[in-house]
Length: 366
Image 1 (tube, rainbow, N blue to C red):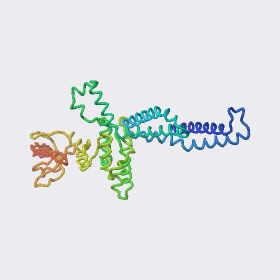
Image 2 (image 1 turned 90 degrees about the vertical axis):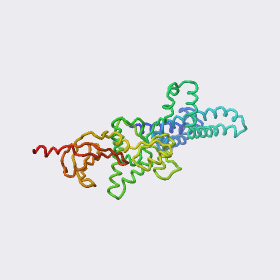
Image 3 (image 1 turned 180 degrees about the vertical axis):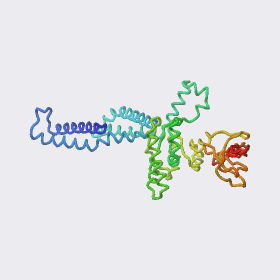
Image 4 (image 1 turned 120 degrees about the vertical axis):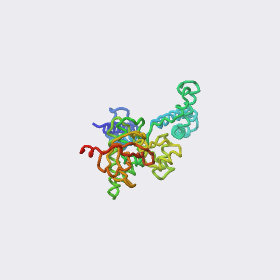
């Protein structure tokens, strides 16, 4: 039996027991021996109504809250739980004085106080969690409990990101799945619901290219979920202060102290201007490319003509373009070249080189 079915049976049994208690209180019977035909006509429908209500509300009190909490960050769960405990403590302290009030206030206000104070405390903790938790961290540091922070204040001031928000562009790109398999991702990958909706909208597009890009993105998410070394969650938070997906990502990154993973150049610039940490897969790819210095020699296959006269173009294994001066006559040949200049552009690294010796194919013929 699956867990959801088991929980539904448990809720139905509890609701049936409540129905029995309600029917018993109406008919004024205490034990089953006192049960009569008249009282059974009231208790039996009460139990059946309880079973039906339990069957209907079981998912709302068991499975659905668990699924909703699955995408909530741990820090928010901790803040909400602490706020609930504080609110209930305040309500418990005020319950006795309120119960001394005249009827019906003495009966109603203690229960109302529990709801009001619990709601207010949870709301305040969720809205001010950063300030409250940072206050206690500062207090601990002042007492000397964090010696590492005193020895390395610069390292302590760096934000510790526990979430990486994935943008639509980086999901469609697909390289994030390859990076995840290497084990270099230290935080939990998070996909906001509005990003998932945009991805689904692209996958349902009438244009073949857009539809294929959207489906590729969904396949990448499935691949990330199948990776046991990667933790990925889906967030239901939808910032109300923004309308565009990029603006929502920035707002959510600031709210959750999360890093944004993207390939979008404009989102990269805007997010960094607002103080949000951005991880750009394109920058990562450029950073891990092989380092080549002027004067070094390498073998390159010239596969096409360059823009300038007599230029040839080849590519390294990592995709870096190599422009070979006087390489046009060596098309489709493996040539030993010497690096003359290396340029770093927005599109990546560009290498200029000149041929050193005759191509291997011609040398072999001689």
